[in-house]
Image (cartoon, rainbow, N blue to C red; front, side, top):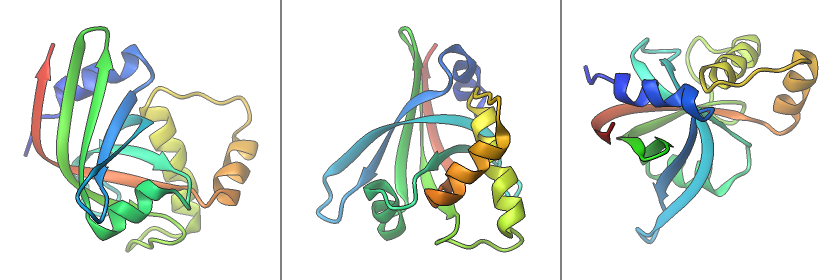
Length: 147
């Protein structure tokens, strides 16, 4: 199993602010910014990089078609990149053992793993549900960094 500690060490330094790169159908890169953290995959239990995406985004459609993804977290001049395969867990991407209640808690866990806090979890849950938020888990195949 790949050691994600270099990535994990950088997460609290800037709320897991990360760039993800997915592939469009024509092979060109699609890059966007997310807040990411490290936590166990809800089905496999393997340590993964995780982030949350709104339900109808381009990144999700690209990851459904081709799960190849890279995630780069940085703080100052330190950075770590994880490359791997994404799996989606959400209202449009069911996963074994993840019912709506487990998804609600999972979205909170990812938010917290990326350094987020919230004063009103009920509002957070409502917004996540309304936006059809999806959890993305990156199973790492490669990590490289400059710390």
